[in-house]
Amino acid sequence: VRVDDGILHVSGRRKKKAGKDEGERDEEEKEEDKKVVRVLRQERKRRARFVRKFHLPEDADEEAMEASYRHGVLTVTVKKEAKEEEPPKTKVITIPVS
Image (cartoon, rainbow, N blue to C red; front, side, top):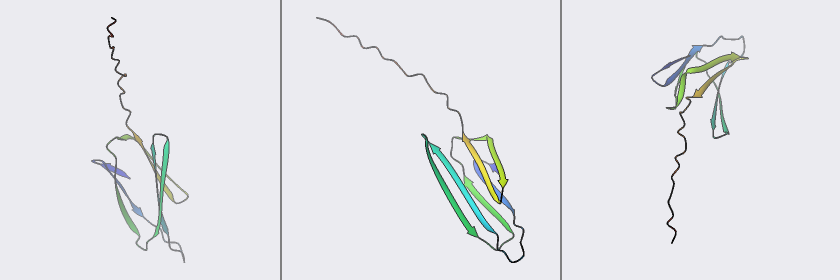
């Protein structure tokens, strides 16, 4: 797994098991305003090598990415960059009294 210019590259090799066809499973999770969206894709391929490319959003924090591989599933976690929030602007309106 590597990142170049905002593109996540995932590549590897599959080991063949006797009599079984290995499957591929992609899972993506997005969190926007406390709303979580999960995408799961599973497909079967016969090739021993694979390459996938994913475009990362502009606010992805490439330095804080994590990856793990467990029970045949690769999980890549991409966090958003912390935004510097501006304090709310306060406007005072003068009301003339007559």
